[in-house]
Length: 131
Image 1 (cartoon, rainbow, N blue to C red):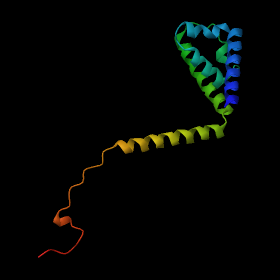
Image 2: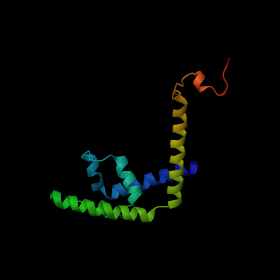
Image 3: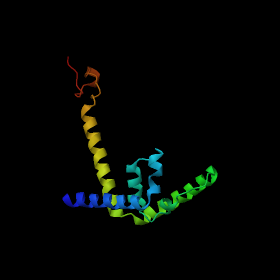
Image 4: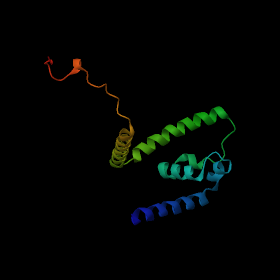
C-alpha cells in the first residue's frame, strides 16, 4: 500500500511540474469550466503529450471549436484505448461486478417476502379426504 501512495504522490508532483510549465492549462479552472481534479484526471488519462494541452489560444468560432473538440475527443479516446492495460480493466470490471452483486445481496435481505396465502383444503399436499 505505501508503494501505491508513493506512486500517487509522484504523479501529483509530475502534474504540478506540468502545470508550472504550462500555466495556460489552468485557464479552465479559473473560468470555472473544470476543476483541478478533472484536469489531473485528464492528464493521467491522456498524458502530457496530448495536443489539447498545447492549444493556448483558440479562435472565437464556436462551430470550429465544436469540430476541433470532436476530433480531439475521438483522437484522445483512441490514444487512451491504445494505452490501456486490459488486464487492469478486466480486474476493475470484476471488482465492480462483485460490488454490484454484494449490493444486490444486501438489498435482497431487506426485501419483504411475498405474502403466501394459507393452505386451503383444495391445496392440500395430501390427495385423500377426511370422512
